[in-house]
Image (cartoon, rainbow, N blue to C red; front, side):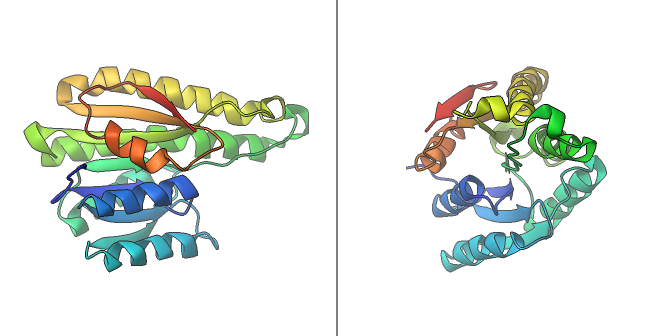
Length: 220
């Protein structure tokens, strides 16, 4: 069993199935968990349910809406979470926007949104988390943990070129940022999630206890 008692986690994209499952698993393992919805729409209700479930376990939680397409907003919200939760040890970046459409039929706005939510959001989250870990010397020996959720290639990948290109970019981002942040003791890993999401939370917890960094682990 993973013991995360006394740790503080932030899950970005807690309104999505995998993000919500990881948030609950973190709480079950003893962590206090801030949940962040990535869009101020009806999905906020889903992240609110996750928050209530965390609190029902006797853990502290807080709810935020974070515009992950704006780096400054991610930075400010991450700082706010750390202040209000009393620190920050673990950050999960689970935002996503699948879009099935041929490239030539996608508008500029749609292409920008796909890249922003499936790549740039992870970039901004990793950067902000690393800055917060350095500020607070998070975790044992000043370490902090970042876990990025990406998608494994699907059977309809030919109709989701922009989406899966952003996923591939996010996986390479994890490898490169892990190498850059290793000297600071920050571990950055990723899950490449397939169609079966039932094991995502358990595999995520195992990745949070490994000393390895720069890993992209397929699950489901």
